Every structure is written in structure tokens, then in C-alpha cells.
Image (cartoon, rainbow, N blue to C red):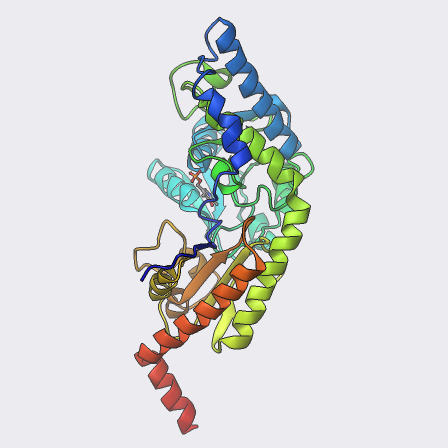
Length: 397
Ligand SMILES: *Cc1c(COP(=O)(O)O)cnc(C)c1O
């Protein structure tokens, strides 16, 4: 039996493109196909559309339009920021600071740079998933050229103390990059007030299309190119522009910011009701991440005695889309590096479920997921030898 009903609670993996955004993109596939670098009317129209989107992104961040560069997504923006700063500033120093809970687009880039002779400090986090400011202060040396710490975590939803980190980096003369892919549309961002030098974003995480993102680079930041080729994006990012994607990104970010307060209120209320229901109805469960400083739609819960992967399979059977660990690591049995960094034992990390709520979720969705999840957990625990042991032990005392 396959469920008719689909309840999508994996908004941190990706989101459905807003129909208004799709509508705005469509003409740029057909009539508006001109290459913005060419010198005739349909090319100029493409160029105007790109510049409009650049302003929309700049406005959303409190940046200037000429500080916004379009990329193929969050992964490219992270790679560009980190490698670009490292290679342009290696005469100044070879030390980079990041956190243990970054997305792989940041972590694997840092690991690559270690092979190229850079030295990287991976800051630990506390049990809520936040970096400690004192650890950051202690880690900065006269060799440090870059601090890259995410705005909000994709697995546990924890929001990092970005303004404090920005202040310290500016005081110490170190560039500060933040992967804000999960934060856009969920947290108010002002790159000037928060003293951010570089910021990555990706449209498909806020109801825009996949395969398009941007990097904010503050004026005067010294950065190398990642891609070499044509002179697009003021000679900083080669490749013919993805016009429909860029138009979609511009409108999606404008709409995400416009509805942010109202949507956050609604989604966090649904999320809180779901959490209360889980903790009340299912014993031996706990919330992972920060109790308050977290993304409005994020719920990450550990269920003792069972495997997250088995939960996902059964939930999928009921039409519920969720994840365990992160989307990139699910399918492998490696426990999430994020949950381990918050101090969870590997077996607890294995039994974690991430439900990320978003724009289209309703009260009925929450009721449905609560009902199915309770059944799934009971069924899996009945089959779990660990749970049988636990029951035996609790009877003996
Ligand atoms: C999704 C995600 C990325 C990668 O973005 P893509 O556009 O899919 O390449 C990077 N960082 C974080 C925190 C993410 O959630």
C-alpha cells in the first residue's frame, strides 16, 4: 500500500518552488533567451533582469547590489568564499577557523585546503550546538585569515551568535564568512550590522529554484576567482548567467523576507505543538539542538532504542518525508557529525529524526505525523533487542 497523502517535513533538504516564482522564471527560458553579454535588445533585457535580481538579493541582506555575485548554489558559494580567501591571502597567513558542525560544503573544502598546506581549526560546540565565543577568541592567531561559521545549522537548527563572531573578526582583522543557506527567510540578516564579510545563500532552501545561489562579498575583500573563463559578474565568476534561475532567486528572496515574520510565527507554533506531542506521547525521547535559538521549522529528536533509518522507511510508507542525520549522509550508517559534536553518543545519534516544517504545513499535517510517528516508534521498539533489554532491566529494579 502506498499512502495517497504526502506530508513534506524536509524543508531543510529543499523546498518546492513557489508557483509565483516559477511563473516569473518561465519567460526567461523562451522569449527572453538573450545572452546578457551581447549587444542587442533581447540581451539588454536579460541584463536588466539580472540586475533587478541582484538588487533584490542586496536589499534582503542590507548589502549593495555590486557586492552580490550569482553562483550555481550554496556549495559553489561556500567553495568560492573559502578557497578564494585562502588563495588570495596566503602571504598574510595560512590559518582558517571553522566549526565542527558545518555543512560538508564547508568542512570538505577546509579538509581540501589542509592538503594544500593550510592549517584549519575546527571549533567544538556546546551541547546546544553553539560555538563558544571564548574558544573563537583563543583560536585566532596572527596567521588567521578567515573564520567561516554557519549562520544556522541544517540538522539541529541551532542559530550561531553571528553578530558577536562578526565583531570579534572585524576587531582582529580577520575575514568572516557565514554559510547562511538555512537562515535566509528564517532569521533577519543585516551584513553591515553583523559585520559579515562574505555570506553564502541558495535559492532552493527558500522556495526558489535549485541550481542557483549567491555569494555576498563585501567591497574591498581580497578574494581569488574559483571559476576562470569569461568576464561575467565583474570578472569574478565566469560562465553565462542562469537568467531564469537568477530571476527566480531574486523574487524568491524578496517574497521570503516579506512574509518572514508571519510565517515564522505560524511555523514555529506548529513545530512547538509537534514537539510537545512527541515528548508527551512517546517515552525515551529528547530534543536535540538549542531550546530557543533555533530555526522556526526545525525539530530534531532522538528516540532511544531504534534506528533513524528504520523510522524513515516506515514514515515514508505513510507518505511522510523526513530525514535522519543530514540528507547528504542518510543512506550511510555514519552517525551525524553534528549530533556527535553536541556530545550525543553514537547510538543516540543513530536514533535521531529531523522534521523540518515549512510554508505548506498545516495543523492536520502535525496531527497526522504525530499519530503515525507514535505507531512507528512503538512498532520498531517492539522489534528492538535494545528495548527488550531496557524493559527487562527496568522491571528488575
Ligand atoms: C543545502 C545547504 C548547502 C548546499 O547548498 P546547495 O545549493 O544545495 O549546493 C550548504 N550549506 C547548508 C547549510 C545547506 O543547508
